[in-house]
Amino acid sequence: MTTWNSLRISLVQQASGLEPDANRSLLAELTPSDSDLVVFPEVFARDFGKPGSDLSPFAESVDGAFGTELTRVAKKRGATVVAGMLEASGDPDGRPFNTLLVRGGAEGAYRKIHLYDSFGYKESDALVAGAVEPVVVDIDGVPTGLMTCYDLRFPELARSLVDQGAELIVLPAAWVAGPRKVDHWRTLVRARAIENTVFIAAAAQSAPRYCGHSMIVDPLGDVLAEAGDGDEVVSATIDRAVLEEARRTNPSLVNRRM
Image (cartoon, rainbow, N blue to C red; front, top):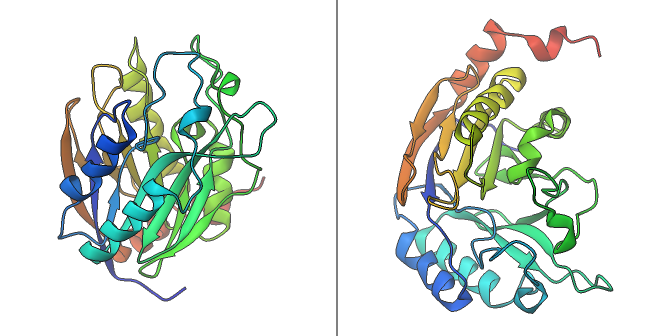
């Protein structure tokens, strides 16, 4: 991976709907033209629907209709675009993977490792977990780790990505609204950034079902951009000099003993 200096990031905070065609059309409408990296939320191709819904009819291959449109939009904007989809898995029960696609200036995919069997939900009834294989891609020279939503609550995944060289972690989410949930989200996004001295770009679906508050956080925990709870696009430029200074100031990755 080549050395980088700066990267312009935009987070598209938008609630996806139940009609895949409508969600696909939003990719071109909402992707800004002035960013190096654009991040859409988790399962942007088609929302989960009601808890317990069968998601198998909405599973696609990574080069299906959603992936094809994502690639077209990314190339037209001259950017890398990340967005979540439901990927056909071959599971005997038809459960899809919850997958992030990276298209445009970089190519990659990440299948969500930690399924949301928590807070009264059981995501594993409708989806199948990906293999425990942390994914790092090169986005304009920036080594970038991929995580999805509930993965945020598992610090070992973020640390594994940083151990593989990640200097930015991209985190699409559909963080379900509820008591304490915004506080958990903001606290955990900043904690993952601080403890790993890494940038985090966390793009969430918007209210009322989800929490919003998409955030770009720097390696010392400073919030560079944050949305409210509605539909919104927020942007910031990250600089490698900030990461280098953070790792000099707080050399916790060097000092750790476990």
